[in-house]
Image (cartoon, rainbow, N blue to C red):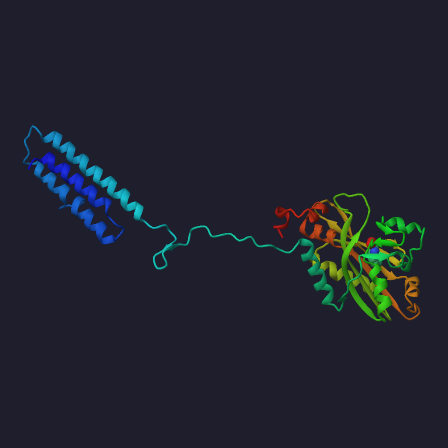
Length: 330
Ligand code: PHE
């Protein structure tokens, strides 16, 4: 038979066989050796070239080389298509490198996280947790805390009034009064809660924020005991190397009073995180505790300030914007 015709026949039969080839290894190998092997169809055509008419040899040789090359290229291309991806598992038929389905997972708000830590520290040293009203009367928020009407100390906290006698509490100290009205001493509580102030909004002040109040009343309670407790607290939250200072201050309901500052590495300045002091005897009198018998200390800390220092957050307003890009970092 004419060699040129033979070449075309092999080309067609190879293409048909390749089209119906499956990824089965044996079938692949069989096809390869039938056409491309050393004793395959194409090799045998080459051997026939020897006996061909010398005039036709160059053209036939070219056609044969073309056939060999075409078959090889389309064979390799087909076989590459059979290759399994890296993560393919033959037993399950699944590709484990495919990206999974992403279910977004929420997280606790950073303020909740820091509050949980604060609660852990104080409950571990004997404090119980109490709560009180966010809307309260003038007596509990001010008067019983030794801040009479028209006293200049009222200007320390710009107040949101609901009516003449009812306020959004400006601090959690109102709960000191509720606790002492409703319990006999000794008592030892912390009081987490939200407070409100009508003050200029800035990177470190907002119209609402959160505090944790502390109140300890017993027979022998000293100012230095309070200092030790607060220092212990600060070190547990910020680590042993934190830079802390007690600064003399004034609150109408404590005497003596102090404020605690923490060194803010980010801003290179002190940041106030809490006020504290020994309970003023006038407060004990207002709730019917005998100041000759009972002593105590109280403190009130700002949760946002503590979270800002701990997590290096530069602006208090981030806490209230509910931006997922912010929240998902915690
Ligand atoms: N209530 C004070 C404030 O809001 C903090 C404070 C609480 C100070 C208890 C002394 C004792 O700033």
